[in-house]
Length: 468
Image 1 (spheres, helix red, strand yellow):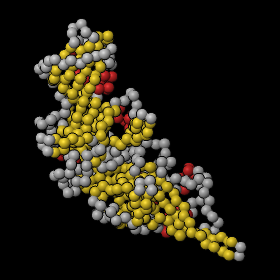
Image 2: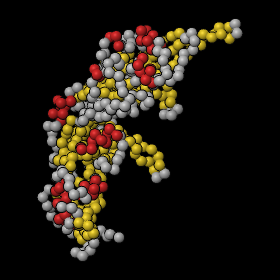
Image 3: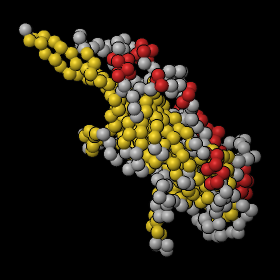
């Protein structure tokens, strides 16, 4: 059936759901098409629920900002066992070094920081377990002197690494920090000889925690981490004895358990201060403060039933645009390195845990995605930054249910999506809460300038009556 959209009249607002206009072909025709503006959304700040820590890269260090408090990030990881590995006969230890490769940093790259490493000596990491991002470090590490893996901490600044290596994949030099283990821990690592399985290796070395021990102005985005054993051995060729230097590297990768732990040291104080201004909302990552939207679905259904005369409804458009107020760096404080998230997702609150524990898009969960968009405003001679969400599919599904709550609550969460290629183009295959630090300031539902609203266009069909 071909439907023609004819908007011929404008009507006045009704209650909090204001009708921008509606029209119909005739009383006897099949379809009624309406357009409305929903303005009675309620938005508020909420403390973020802990993320399920499944990082592709780690944030490591501590950063203190005036507006958003102090973020401390540590990493805990097992090491992948080189199954079946055997050292050559007569091998002798030279040294053991820990290497931290990072792709970038957050904060002041010229500020000094120090790293320390501790062996996991309490509860071992479990590959099959899901850990929240705020899991206590003390659950895994005592951090006693006997578990300290270096004689002294490594001091450096992020833009002055100890070395770098060229990556042909990234076509760039990847900076890294080299940390030499103490003689005691070097001997401990070199004495490990059972590489028959990952479980056997974990019993000998459960893993380690890497943390910042000095500095509060920078954190590294760690891409790769490993421990390398430098050794040599001798062998005979005829009557000649030769010495060969070699290395064996133990990597932290997806084959074993990796964990990022975040602590927002003054989260309550920051939350209360930021919530004083009700004209704006904030979304801070990783796992700090989120924005929650409360949408009056029963009120929407009532209005739609009135306008479509109880017809079966298809929501053609339900557009929610969220204005970002800190899209550029103008007016930012000197120590405010946090920028808006590049991508956001609206997730129904009741499905929050399911979505992020599985890390997948599913047909039975409400997940609506938007990247950070911008457009030039010729009137103000400035760029406008915003997120653009279309809730039409979700609204259509909700309106066809016999029963649902008076309101639905949706949480705005910074995310990273992993894409894969298909014949029809790129599509998302997994969702992760954003591990990178970000701060997004948006106009709230109480903003006197441009409060949140949802622009709706919907069609009413006569073939089915929607539920009461």
